[in-house]
Image (cartoon, rainbow over the protein chains, first blue to last red):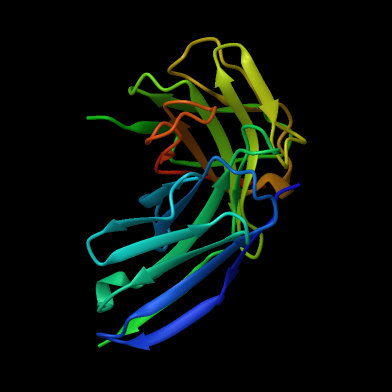
Length: 113
Length: 118
């Protein structure tokens, strides 16, 4: 059974810092890994999707990397802003857990002015 | 507008009263799935459907039923709700359920349904 872990559980940083969120997964035969953002009481917004054959994806100030062999993904946020405050979730899709999407517990990010 | 819709958005009900939460997508997606989100437990998959008439259990299927008679709809049925099913429920869809490259497996989520069972 796939297990996904996110570290740290919570992170508080001053505005302008670059930061890294970590995600690890136990079953490396995944199809892809997706990063989401969730604001309190709201739904999930897709940030980045990395296919199993890719090493990284970039969107604006966000960069996500994937190392399948070691079962790790990182989300890098450059020049953080208060508006980045949210819960960040990673989710591993497919592989031996055919058709399943497994989420990590999330990292709660607070960026203070 | 391409979207996943869920209804109702909020529901308060009583133990044992059957209910259905609807999910619909207008993107011609093959893959659809349901999740529940609970404090401290995160998001957990209840059921998924690779395509019409093809469904399978996720990690927490007990107490739930689903049906996929049409491509666009994937309702979640609670035959006899209990208080431990009080949760925030999300429906999601993607173009494909198998490895397809590109953005085939990118998941799009509905806005959520907050269910309280008394």
